[in-house]
Length: 472
Picture 1 (spheres, helix red, strand yellow):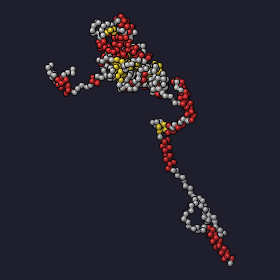
Picture 2 (picture 1 turned 45 degrees about the horizontal axis):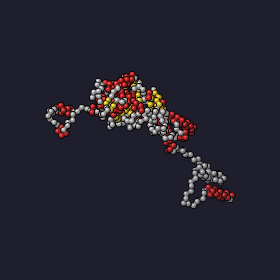
Picture 3 (picture 1 turned 60 degrees about the horizontal axis):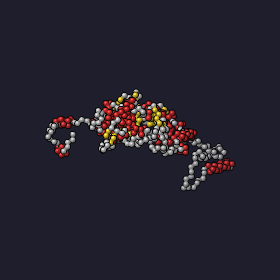
Picture 4 (picture 1 turned 60 degrees about the vertical axis):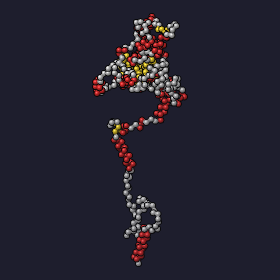
C-alpha cells in the first residue's frame, strides 16, 4: 500500500508540474498581440525529471546574438566624399583640401566692427576735404555727386600727369567714384585716370603705349603732332576731353567724340611722347570751322604752343584749299591767342608784298595766303584801325602803318617762338583719303581707257550736248 501511495503521489505531483509549466490557452482575437523582444521573453521551465523530487526545474535563458549595426547609405556617401576631398588637390597640385580651406579666415564680429569704424573715419576725413555735409558722411551715404554743374557735389582738385601735379580750374565730369577723390593720377601716354598711387605705378610699369594712338603727321625737333580719330580711339579721346574740361570753361563736349579729329601735340624724348596740348575739329563742318577747341596744359603755357597749334590748323586749311575759322565762342585765352596770331599773319603778308597800293593787295588775296576767313581778317584790321572809309565814297581803304607792323613782328621774333615748317607735314585731307587710298582699276578698264580715241575739238560728247557744260 505504501508503494501504491507513493506512486499516486508522484503522478499527482507530475500532473501539477505539467499544469504549471503549460500556460492556459487564450481565446483568439482579431488583433495580434505585440511581439515581445526576445531578450525580454520568459524562458520556459523544464519538466520534472526523475530524481528531482517531483519538482520542475527552472528553465535556463538561451543567449541571443546581437546584430551589428551596419552604416546607412548617407553615412557611407559622406565618408566617401570626405575621402575624395582629402585626395583632391588644388592650385595645380600644390595644395590639398585642408591647405586650401579658408573658413578659418572668415571675418568675425570684431572684424566687422573694426571695418565700420574705419569706414566712418574715412567718410569724415573725406567730408573735411571735399566739403561734404557731416551728417551725410556719418550716415555713409554721399550727397548728390556732381555731373558738371559748378559748385555742386564733388570736384577733382588736382591731377598728377607725368612729372606735374596740376591744379584744376573748372569742374570736369569724371565718374562719381573718381570725383570723390581730390587727386587723380593720369597716365601721360594713354590718359587713363586712377584713384590710388599704387594702381598708378603698376599701370605705368606695364602700359603698352608710348605715344598717342594715331598717325604722326608732323615732326620738327622734339615736337610731334598726332592725328587721332575719335571713332577709332574713343576711350583715349574721351579721356582727352575730360582733361580739357578741367581748363576750359566753355567746353561742353565730353563723350560724343566720334565726329571729331584730335591733333595731339607731344614732346618726345627717350622715354616716349609726353602730352603737352591738343586741339580738335569736326570731320565735316558745315560752318567751315577748322578748330573746335584748343587746350595747352598749364605747365606748358607761355612757350608758344598755343599759337603753334593755331598755325598748324591754318596750314591744314590751306592744304585742303578751304579757308577756316575757329568755332565760336572762344575762351578768354583762346581769343587772345587768336588775335595775336591773326595780327602777326596779316602783318607778314602785307609787309611781304612789294607794292602795297596795288590792286593785288585785297582781303581775298590775304585770305588765300593765310587760310583765314574774310570775317576774321576784317575783324583784325578794324581792331588795329587799318580799315578806313574813303571820304565821299562807300569803299574802304587798307591803310598799313609800316613802322608799327615792323615793330610788332620784331617783338614776336625776339621771343624765339617755335614756328610750323610746312615742308615737314605728312598729311592728306580726311575727305580725300578714301579716294587717294583706293586701289587702281582692273586691267581691262585700263586697256579700254588707253585704247579710247581722243575726241576732236569740234566733237562733243552726249553729256556736253545735253547739258551744255562738260565737267573738266
